[in-house]
Amino acid sequence: MGTREHEIYDIVGIGFGPSNLSLAIALEEHQANSSQQPVRAAFFERQPSFGWHRNMLLPQATMQISFLKDLATFRNPLSRYSFVSYLHASDRLVQFVNNQDFFPTRQEFHQYLEWAESGFRDRVTYNSEVTEIRVSDEGSGGEQLLEIVVRDTVGGGTRVVQARNVTVSTGLVPRMPDGMLRDERVWHSSEFLAKYGRMRPEDLKNVAVVGAGQSAAEITKYLHDKLPHAQVSAILPSYGYSVADDTPFANQVFDPTAVDHYYFGTENTRDAFWRYHKNTNYSVVDDDVIRELFRRSYEEEVAGEKRLHFLNLTRVKEVKRSGNDTRVVLHSLLDGESEQEMDVDALVFATGYSTMDATRLLGDLDRFCERDEEGRHRVERDYRVVTSGELSCGIYLQGGTEHTHGLTSSLLSNIAVRSGEIADSIVERRGAGQRV
Image (cartoon, rainbow, N blue to C red; front, side):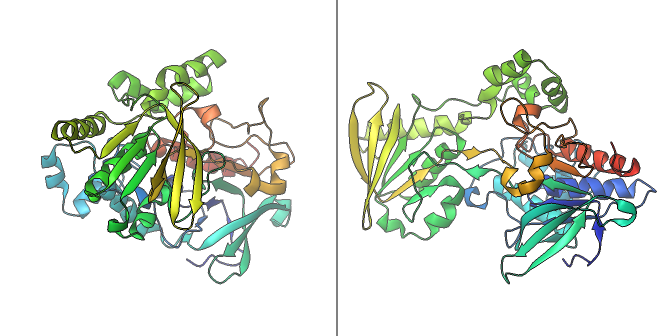
């Protein structure tokens, strides 16, 4: 994409994963249904091409949400960017229906995202990292604007674009336990397939996976499948895996109306959401994956050929390296004292992600942003950061709003409605001269 010089955009999106892709769709469909002046939007992504959790697109791994929770359907069931439209365009709609499954594989859903993204190549620039956002007063008639400094990650050059609003969607940050560093034999799940692909399978005789969530269980299963000669250990801080609650009443916490209940609720309301429903998404595993792993372990017990091991109530205390050798020091939580060591050829930390924090990216602009008692950004219901009267431009967050909007802040479940609400806010604020 070539952003035009001197163009003033209504919105510049930082990052172009599913959230800002969904926003681009919402803006396009608003434009199609409105006689108003088109909303001018541009998006910048530091990756060389579109990608969403590519290193966890494991064979047969399925989505944990219905295919109807796509980029658009909950906001606009008639959208041409729905998953059903993708199936029709791919000539697979009938086969998908015959498959009788609400949950497509991650690989197929990623293909759907790529299909949707292909319609926005004129609005997104890849290999482009936003390094700074600052206030500019160079707009016509004294209009306040933002200057977004963008660095070309390939050529190294920079350019500046102007916008009335920005939406930050830089994604989650891979989390490693304190003191643990990644290398060619110590990986985070976010880089799993890439790092695994660099290894010779015959060199992986002892592998271990740390974590008790869905990714940890899926990687354990994958390694057990792919390395029939290897010892595979699952290092669990819990006493085994816990099942994800995907029953109908529990799933209501991901409904669009639940965002209102959380946002406008009391502290007791918000506490209840997390206390009672955290097991819908955090450190839990789908029932079928749990049962499959247990079945394999039991069959090995019967056959007397044990190679799948579950180390319950265990944490990694230290990782020692010596050349190509990696030794893991394990600490037992059962008695709080016992330790053991094991040599591994690969160690995978499926230890989750930290929520997005826009502070570093906002830089000096952050001084206009108001914070709550715990130092977190205050955020309006429309996902716009609360700012002082000195700043009329809008800063929208797609992620990092769990404290204000609840469990769906960074999840796909509410992505279509969330992006629609942001699009509506941008249009309304433009109509009100950015004073809302």
